[in-house]
Image (cartoon, rainbow, N blue to C red; front, side, top):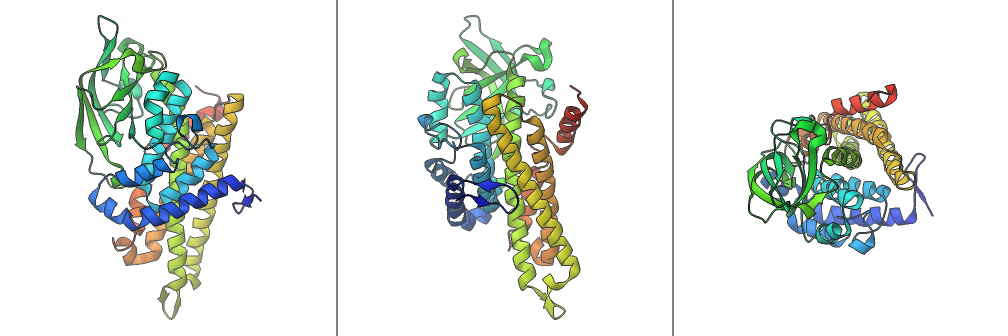
Amino acid sequence: MAESTGLVFELSDEHIMLRDAVRDFAQREIVPRAAAFDESGEFPLDTVRKMGAMGLMGIDVPETYGGAGMDTVAYVLAMIEIAKADAAHSTVVSVTNSLVNYALMRFGTETQRQRFLVPIVTGQKIAAYSLTEPTSGSDASAMRSRAVLNAAGTHYILNGRKSWVSSGPVADTVLLFSMTDPDQGRHGITAFLVDADQPGYVRGKKEPKLGIRASATSEIVLEDYACPVEHVLGEPGQGFKIALTLLDAGRIGIAAQAVGIAEAAYEASVAYAREREAFGQRIGAFQMIQAKIADMKTSLEAARLLTLNAALARDRSRQDGRRFTLEASMAKLFASEAAMRIAHQAVQIHGGIGYSKELPIERYFRDAKITEIYEGTSEIQRMVIARHELGLR
């Protein structure tokens, strides 16, 4: 029997089973260690391997490649449960599923899928995605890294510095974008599948981040790195198009992450409001606290539905080929800002103890902020949405 989410969306039995299994795993394996991972910044390799064994590193990848063979709705449900336990773990899942796996399934050759995809979805290897550079974030055309085809035509020689690479310090495989024809601007960008254990690949400084600290983020330096032409993803010059396509999927993952963070902050706030007493009564009896709870709940459920709607749009696109850019941007924009509002109110409801590391509330607050920034800032999402609605390109 299908289960209602509380509004108009129903989950299948298969979706419920997955969600419950992931919830059990996340609460048992991740929650007890989340604070320690946040404090140390250590990459949670053992739990990532376990998630791979469960099929969570390839949720919508076909079983023939070692994946779970499910859909984007299943991916969103899993992401919410993992993010609710610890946002850093969900970042690893998001980068792997939304960006690298999707890229290989959408643009990769069969040889590339066998070589790169199979070990990633089974958790044997860690994947990373690298588009941003110190001088180019939202403006990819300002990219300074260069890839030059050698005289023999067998390898591209890559040089440059990439920044903010999630899982960069531990990645085995990196989907990396570099300029092959600077005169063409963004149309001169090419996507490469990079082996991190080859000469010329240097792991740069690790970023001391505000939140999602255990996801491990660093620079990557390329020094005459020789990438075989067989490891070009898609065609030379297609990199910008590929990146935009992947970001549509990535934004659904970040929306789901934001919902998970928001749900954790909201549930903690409800529990605290029911138990904490002040002025002779539980603080949940005060109208100002009730107003906060009502607004938090409404924002949370609206974010959840927008995210599920985007997931459905992506699943439909596999049949009809329609873009899901608008749905993904709306979900990402609303869910990320809702997570920030809800986490902020959670700290306020908890008062002083919410500001202390004794509870995870302050971690939710720190983790929520990044959802408004990566995979396209809130400002970029508003631009995407408005241009779509106004018919602008």
